[in-house]
Length: 95
Length: 274
Image 1 (cartoon, rainbow over the protein chains, first blue to last red):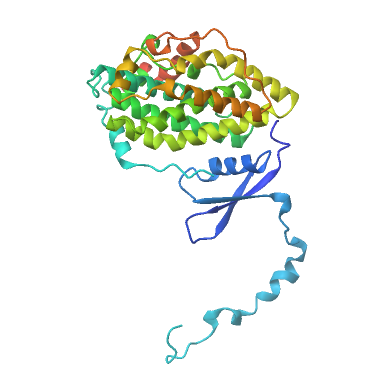
Image 2 (cartoon, each protein chain N blue to C red):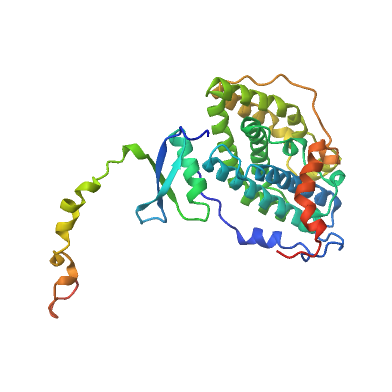
């Protein structure tokens, strides 16, 4: 089927000014300009955004799922890294 | 990226001025000035017919993303058509209970989709014209027409850019895509002169500041199309004998088939409720 040789692009939408762009999905398109158009037509039809980014999927450097253990598991038992771990003394204001 | 079209409440209200839904035999309410009603029908029929045509691509476009692009354009056009027919009278009655000889759209919009190249050629030629027209109708002295144009002009600007983008990619693409694009333009070219025709109805409304005079932007249109074709490395087709008369109800055989598909449900089940 035609279209299958089009590269894949990841789509990021900024919902409104001040918020970050968030990954929403991907589109196929022959080039960056049409990737933006396809992203607009696919992901912002219902006023979802005010700005779009597209990036070639192959340009994204992803972490290796096989390394998930060493990358992420060590954080599991370090609850003191969450601010809620600490009791704030009553005298401390403005925090 | 152009900004997203916004939904303007006053336009919605204007569109809802049409009489009750389902009152199929009621006389058309709405615009009492026959020239204005006629003009609104022409603009409305252009949108509705091309919207219906583009809808035929649903599920058949070259890629899922293109399917959505074409459906989005179709919905914009059907929206504009609904608004203009709502100004002219009862939009539903005009859309579903009118025979082919009473339709006033231009010939270009009723042309069959053909292949993707022909669809894009039709879209480029129509959207470029429609965009230039709406840019001027925004200043119409008729409040309702100006409001619909103001809402539509951003939608149409996008259609125009998308069609130009695809024209360049197909024209400056592979040997086959260039051939199909050229054949599509060749098919559509004879319907362009009609877009710039001014008959008695339009002449009167131009005089009254209600309609836009297409002759004023014909040169701009020709250069805009020529610029896209140059970028697409395509030659403009040789001028052909123009086909005219859509505004007077003269149409190709294609329109009857389109209407049969579009109208059969409400005609077969007149009281059907969605």
